[in-house]
Structure formats: structure tokens, C-alpha cells
Amino acid sequence: MFLKLGTTAFGGPAAHIAMMEDEAVRRHRWLTSGQFLDYLGATNLIPGPNSTELAIHIGRARAGWRGLLVAGISFILPATLIVSAVAWGYVKYGALPAAAGVLYGVKPAVIAIVIQALWGLGRRALRTAALAGLGLASLVAAACGVHELVVLAGAAAVMIVTTATAGGARAAPLLILSTAQGGTASVTAATTAAAPFGLWPLFAVFVKAGALLFGSGYVLLAFLRADLVERLHWLSEAQLIDAIAIGQVTPGPVFTTATFIGYVLGGFPGAAVATLAIFLPAFVFVALSGPLVPLLRRSVVAGAALDGVNVASLALMAVVSWHLARASLVDGLTIGLAVASLIALAGFRVNSVWLILSGGALGWLLH
Image 1 (tube, rainbow, N blue to C red):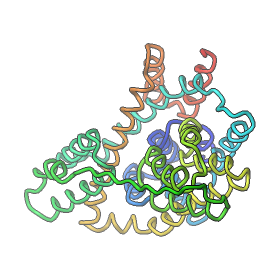
Image 2 (cartoon, rainbow, N blue to C red):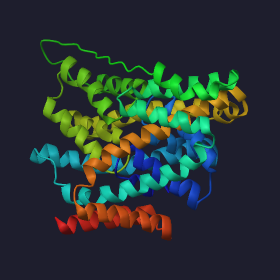
Image 3 (spheres, rainbow, N blue to C red):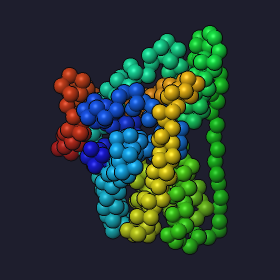
Image 4 (cartoon, helix red, strand yellow):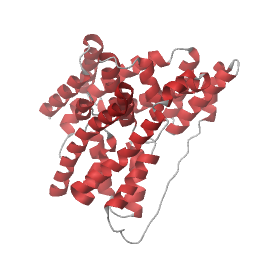
């Protein structure tokens, strides 16, 4: 299942999560909707690539440590091979292959998949008026640019307070809006000359990113820019932007940006080292935190905090989806494709993978 998703899951973490929900909850029934939400919330509490960590959580829940390894590797491997092939062409010819046509047809299908997942998960997560109000407040905060960690932490804190105090439910939406204050941080370092390249320093750069990074691929852009462009001078600005673009337009985890950069800097050994480094912390974090998720749910206070994180996670997913929809539904045809895909999903239970493949083929033909 995860090998298939790693080959066909375009659209970034929100789309990946939606496709995993369709496969693991609706089709295979390996998890209940509530369990899926809990694991989704847990991935937002640890650094690293969210959709990859969710895949690893599902694998661990399904088949222990062997499932953890199989799910994670299967989801990462196809994207790694695809990005390595693209990086080879980039180094050889100095340009990115055109993918606009394929993405033109894929993105509307991705929007439909995410809408269906948000609807299904939202019905489970927003089960009380307090949670619904908290979800709305989280949505407003995220839309106003409040940092993801602040939204998640604020939602968890609100639910702890409302659980511990009488009448706190009414204050929940106001509390998260009053306490959610965004912050920005930048790390800048400069040297006068490029540092010598090596596989161990490359490993150190990407294992640090995988172990410390919260947020989207755009946060990864800022993180890697500080190390690879400003401090080490291994990449140019244009090369880094190309690397982020490849992570965004290829299927599978966005963090395979590391594979592209590793190949550009050190060929296939560099690609292997960078990929291992950026994804290794995710396996460690999930292995350590996965067994704690059921225990959190059994605790009243911790379960309430997890409810808050789940609601905030869906709010963040909805904001990302809104921005993706604005960029993807650019004309009548793409809007029609999104509507048709939603009807196929909701009315006829068509597998989301077939929608992705069909949309990509149609977009390629039209362009």
C-alpha cells in the first residue's frame, strides 16, 4: 500500500494524509477514524516530515517494528528513486524536466481527495461544540499566519484548561486566539569561502534538519538556505529553489528535496547519505512516541490535549488546502476536474490513486 502511495501521492503532506486515510481507514480498515486522528495529532508533536511519520505510525500499529520499517521505507523509496533520476538529468542537462502538464491535471484531483478526508476526519474530531469552536479559532489563527507550533500548543493548552476548569468550554475559542502569537526566527551565518564538501558534513546538515524541523517544505527552504547557501556555500540560491521545487512536484515525501541536493553535491553516494540522514530521525521519533499514543488517550487530561492537537491539525491542513486550491483551480476545466473527482470519491468510492493517475494523464494530453 505504501509503495503505491509513494509512487502516486502528489500534492504534499495534506494530500498524502488524505490518501492514507482513504486507504488505511476506509478501504483496509486497519485503523478507526479516531485512531487515525490520534496518530495524525502525534506526528504534529514531533519534528520531521509529517506524512512520512504518519506512514511509519500506521505501519507500527499494523505490524510492530517490522511494519514500522516496511511502511516508512516503502513510502520513501519510490520518491527517492524518482528524484534521483530527475537529479541525474538536472546535473547532465542543467535544467528541470517540464512537469506543468501533469501537475495541471493532478492538482484538482488532489484537492478533491483532501476535501473528502477533511470532511470525514472533521466529523470525528469536531464532536462537541467546544471542539468545533476550538477548530474555528485554530483555523483563524493559522490563516492569519500564526506559527504551526503555536496553533498546536495553544489548542492543546485550551483543552487541558477546559477539562480542568468548569465552564471553560465557552472560553476555549477566545483563549487560543488570545494566546496564539506568531514568532519568527532566523539563523544566519556567513563565511568568506565555501567549506570543503564531505559526506559526513552532509549527513550532519540533513540529520539536524530531520531532527529539528517543524513545518512545511517552505520552512525546509529557510532551514537549508541557512546551512547550505549562507554558511557552507555548497549551493547557489537558484539550485536550492530548484531542489525545493522538485520535492514539491514529485510524488511522495517533500523531504526528498534532500535526495536531490545530495545528488547534486555528491552523486549517488551523496543522494543516499542525505536521504538517510533527513528521514532517520522520523523512524526514531515514531518508535519512541508510538507506544505512548494509546496511553495518552486513556488519560483524561492528556486525551483532552490530544483532542485539541487533532482539531488544530485539521485546521492547519484546511489552510494549506485552501492555498493549494487557489493555485490549482485556475480555470473552468480544473474546477470541473475537482468536482468530478469529488463526485467519484464520495459517490462511487473510486480509489484516489486512479484519480491521481487519470488527472495526470489528462493534464499531460492537454498540454
